[in-house]
Image (cartoon, rainbow, N blue to C red; front, side, top):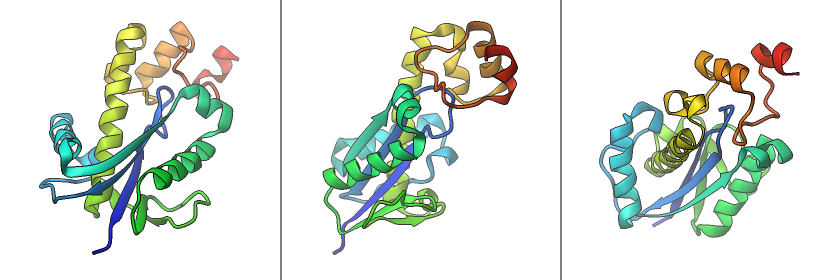
Length: 184
């Protein structure tokens, strides 16, 4: 039987927080897997526990805002994919999306996170890890209200950046049109 490693990421688009990438090989089927964005936070947490409690072999990679600023998001994605392939041994690797970022021996599929169980599991691992981390940052930097927007560029988040400037977990290389006149 062929071993499949599903790979997905969370946190590519936010203005703050880590990029989190996960690779996952399922040992046993898990009921209810789906694209993490289509699940409630409570359901994601339950599935995360099922995945991590011996139902899978997995590997999680994180890149900080400063690493993203220094290397660029595409470079971080490429390096994360390489690291997952080095740390998880499988016959086939499937990444959610339409580009392999130049990584060999990696297949891609658009919306694989909703179609392939291993990619769904990776999606859940990445999203739960990302959200847990950003909630910890919310305690560290309460003025930004990260618990409400998870670092994404919502109106509230942009207003908080206008008011307080950037925190250490903000991606300063991301250009925000609404801020260009005020911060630069």
